[in-house]
Image 1: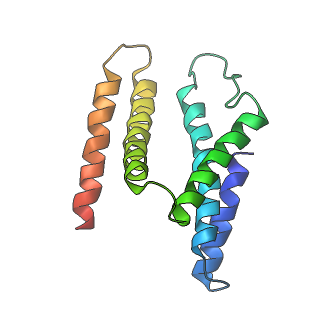
Image 2: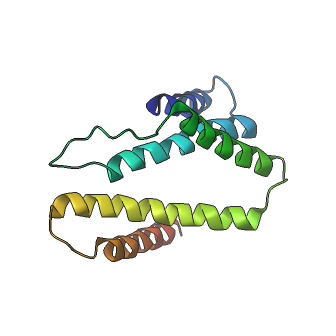
Length: 141
């Protein structure tokens, strides 16, 4: 189910790029909300992955839990699209989301590479994510 949520944004982006239609702000909000809410499932899957053990723990406890996450994401996106949301709060939340995304990704890579050794992964991950964001910002200039 999670991987299927990336199909609408892929189709919308590809067909818009190929000139079949022009992507609208509403279609970007809807497809982005679907993809963004489903991305958390893949992050949870990576966070709960155990190299040496059983990996039978479900990502979401129920379909309603995943649909609720998609509904909240879509609702907030539509509020911003209609200029009814708080842009400052949204920008802080989205910025923290980017930092946490990179932190978790780096943490998972380092945790899986180190195995059972106990290292301060969280601090290294946070520092690594800040460095990646700074590098991307510098490269954009």
